[in-house]
Length: 268
Image 1 (spheres, helix red, strand yellow):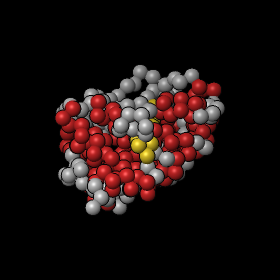
Image 2 (tube, rainbow, N blue to C red; image 1 turned 90 degrees about the horizontal axis):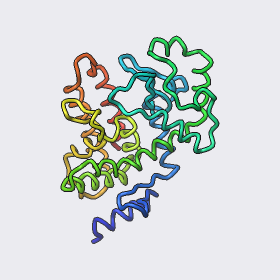
Image 3 (cartoon, rainbow, N blue to C red; image 1 turned 30 degrees about the vertical axis):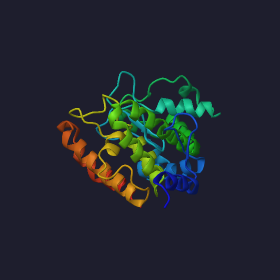
């Protein structure tokens, strides 16, 4: 009978997913896997529309841009959530994309409020931004995949040594299960790694780390559909707990049905 480790290797060979030759826990997502996950990410965040690439949700202090609704804060605004749109712009430049002049300086979001953002929706800068984002969907997908590749080392570094092995084993098992790469890429771009002290309500986070830690299963079990099903269930529990702990003035309960529908797509 093949060992669990041997079965993991065979699944990796079949899926094309690779673990890097650097740190033992390094994950390498293929371009094809990134594109597949990116298309679903665009659907989840923007309903697959070009118009949805430039959004500012009611009740939030930042614009949400691109297929992953990457956060961009205006001048003087810094909320608890990690800002990622400037990193995307830098990534696009490194890959040969010429940015409009007003985006090259790396300055803050030029629209100070949601009201101004919405009033400017048909303005020249907004149209130019949508054209840029619509023309770089493939690179945005790869940018999102790179965030997943960097997530595991961040999560393990944030944990006591005694808690690292179960999280790492669950991460690996989900990654090589059906829809696993999509689930991991989508969730880490949706709710973060779960390591920032600012991304907490009542000292409890809601990121990828919390989802993996909260899975009700054997972290050393064989990869398969049950891994992503339990990942989906754990994500729903983590998000419901976030809403329960959230400040009342944020009215986060209104988002929970949509969040649960989203993580339900992770199950095969």
